[in-house]
Each structure stands twice: as C-alpha cells, then as structure tokens.
Amino acid sequence: MIGNRLASLLTVMVFVLAAPVQAAQPLVTDDAAVVAPKTCQLEAWTRSAHDGRAYGAQPACNFTGNLELTVGGARAKPDDGETSSVVQLQAKTVLSPLGEGVWSLGMLAGGGRDTGAPHGSSAFQLYYAKGLASWYPRSDLEIDL
Image 1: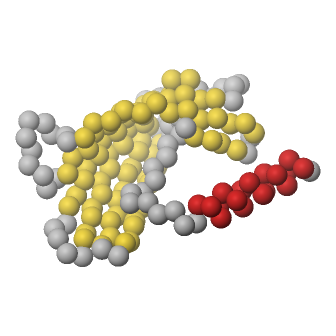
Image 2 (image 1 turned 30 degrees about the horizontal axis):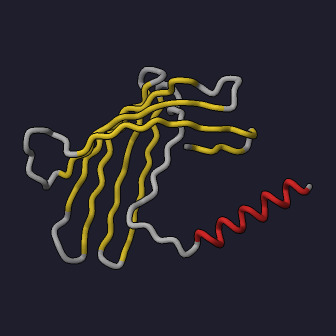
Image 3 (image 1 turned 180 degrees about the vertical axis):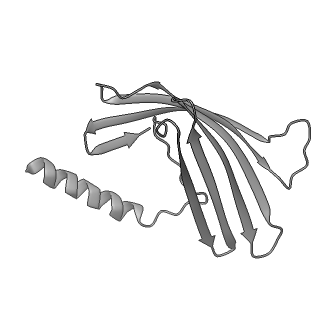
C-alpha cells in the first residue's frame, strides 16, 4: 500500500515538474525490441509551433525475424522560408531478447538526408548508431534507456 502511494506521489511530481519544460525537437525513444516477424508498423507524428509545422511518418517492417528496417520521411513547413524534407533509413536488431530475464538489449543504426541540401560526396548527411536497453521491473512496466 505504501509502495503504491509513493509511486503515485512520484508520478504526480514528475508531471508537475515537467509541465513547464519546452523542447525544440520531438523526443524520440526506442525500445530494445523489434516488431513481430513478417509484420509492419507505422509511426506518424505532427508538430505545430508558432513559426510553422512539421509532420512525418516512419513505416518499419520485420521481414526476417530479428531485423527491423525503417524508411521514414519528414517535412517541415515554416511560415516564412522554404519547405524542407528529410529522408531516413534505419535498421534495428535485438542482441539479447527479454526471455526469462528483466532486461532486453538491442542496437540500431541509420542515416538521414535533407533532400534540399547539396549532395556532396555522400548520399547521407547524418549517420547514427544507438545502443538500446529495456528494463521490465514488473509485467506492466517498461523503462527504456
């Protein structure tokens, strides 16, 4: 009972403290899991701000069983200025599945390109790789790092 009250109090405190926080970019989190084999999912978002709006979509598919491939795109439309588009390619895999433990480990890597920018020597302007860890302290709680 005391644990439930403490958890509720901490949750309320987090929301109260986080309310005035503003961020310039969308917060992107990912878990150390891939979509089920031979399935796909679509993540879509939109963001409106005082100086314009942006929207995007990222379909992800798992054709092999442990490799999720994503091809995404986003478009920004500022109120004053030129519209820009970004294309993203990404691959994600699970290195240590959840199984009987409470942790799952994975990694992802990808690249992105602003389609309006000069090409230069590479098709992509941005490369990235991330280590992923998901902790499942209870069956109804997941914490992604």
